[in-house]
Image (tube, rainbow, N blue to C red; front, side, top):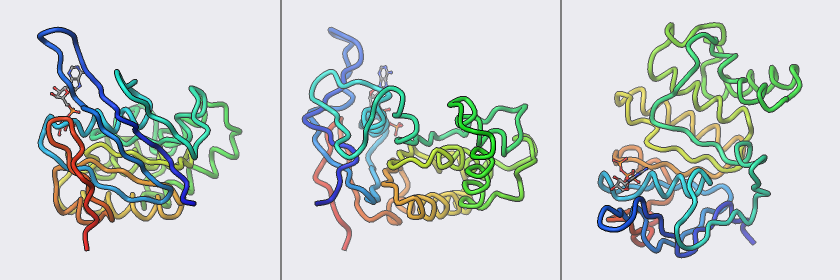
Length: 223
Ligand SMILES: Nc1ncnc2c1ncn2[C@@H]1O[C@H](COP(=O)(O)OP(=O)(O)OP(=O)(O)O)[C@@H](O)[C@H]1O
């Protein structure tokens, strides 16, 4: 049977209360299987990021349940098993590319030689190995975003959730970033969920989900 990385069971997330309450995600059920490659599209404000944050355990549902049947997710293991890529890379300006990539591993107390090994592998996977000694200010926005992906991959996650990862990149840099994400998650045998407004991005993924007003419409598998 296919392993389920994350399952949302009738999940809702409401922000605020009373008249100002916003139902960002409404009664949504879905599953992400091991190795799945899913694009989540939908208009701005339709709940894509909120759904992703619920899957990442960065938000708690106000109703329903999110579970990770195939992953031993606890507060301690979450960040290693589930990698989240945001729209903006948020690198530490005073650390070089290799140090930025290894920072979460160093904080987690991973052995120095193991950090070096995983950083080298991750930078290779996203094709920025030659930038290892550069500072963030010395690299392009597209390269910085690939370093942010490497920082996630260095933890060897089983599930990668990318929230508009190409949103701040031009077409060519966006394509390169997506190439790197697809190749790296295939290498790590990780499932990948990408939210996007861009059809060119969605078309590269196997399964298409659409959100409207907080609801997940029927998933479409392109022929
Ligand atoms: N922390 C928050 N507090 C209050 N409202 C929020 C919060 N986060 C999201 N919302 C609201 O929830 C709704 C869904 O937002 P969400 O960011 O999930 O949508 P989205 O589809 O990802 O949008 P975009 O494509 O513009 O990023 C919106 O109405 C938004 O204003």
